Image (cartoon, rainbow over all chains, first blue to last red; front, side, top):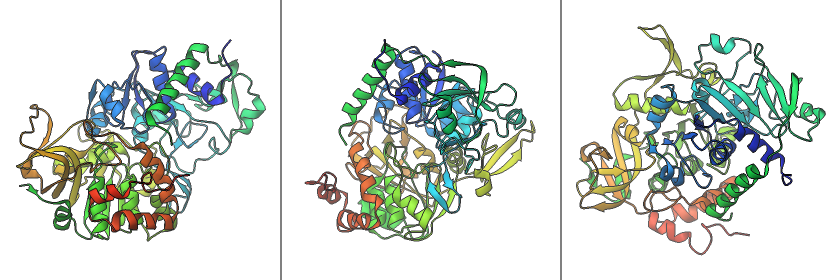
Length: 257
Length: 288
């Protein structure tokens, strides 16, 4: 039996499992980076992690605090310039998976990382787009990892920074976006996948111990469920120890606050 | 041809009120010492450009140097918000800041276009993004060959680009390595280029395809050891993550910020003295 685990660990482990071995993955900083490195250190040793700082094939032994930590450069197969990583690798169609996080998401997996409130007079100014709009548009497919709450899973985004399925249905294809778009949204409560026709995010798996009422309360739209909803496998001992070792090494390397 | 001068001279001669000014460095090699000198020399009304405004832009914005900011991601990496950047946008403090917001792929391409002396950049991007609603300079064109619809955005050609690099030689040829970001493109896109370096050496000993800016594209080179602190210079020193965390507390409050800037930037003569003032306390902040 695995040890007890946190909901955050469940989220990271469930997200890591979605990254297949050998995939070329454009990785966002924070939760996506944690999940992608957990995947690399467990079932996906041949995953190629690319950070927008131009580090290609990064194999960091500790998690980067910033997207351009020296550890990423030192452990990479090569380091290319920012124009090169975006133009030749991403726009060039060489990325299988974009791994993103967000502050807000809607039911068609469009995401907001720009502002809460109005653009001109924001309640909270967020960092902004970074590489996300083009990653979301151009990567072969997209994985999104973010904690779930009614404030972040909203009916209406305050700002569409990067697109998922726009208004749903075939809107994404009609807009001419090359990538397939989001294939899974992994939260601390459940896993959503887009409905094959409507493209609305649909619950396919619920993490152990999570009640439907809890995840419905944490979602700003009426939740739809796949016809057969499964229970997410708990993190196993190896997944948990790999993740915890990684976090511990990171804390040691970056020093105390 | 590059002149090897003090940082004070380099900024005085090359950065003027009202200039468009880019300080580039993607987490690595951020020209922080040069940013401090811009603040010390009280430049005003600057049109700042930077893919990832971080602490040094928080400082320039909070000290009232900037009228305008073109950017694609504004945050304190690994920590959270830039409080002075947010206060300027949310509350017009210390004065209104006009922003032009773009994506990383766009700004990177726009520097490439600028370096290539083209008026605009073309990319496959922005479709469906609300950035289009608030930046009328992001437009679309139709490819004359395939009829594909593509985003077209103005190239970036700063009056001045400032970067930090590891080495220069006595002639002012500049060598940088590691995470290169957009520095080469931003430098070649600019009218004037200021480079701070860790050291000046007799021989760069650069392999043939290394990233070297020839002396004759550089306006001024200034030696500032540690000049990328609190970011890092590969092969010289690590990123000071503790400073990035401490900055959150310094910048959160207007008065604390102003006092810190007075003590550590305005009342110091140069970067070496600034670094000395951080001794005794952890980065100038009394810690609990």
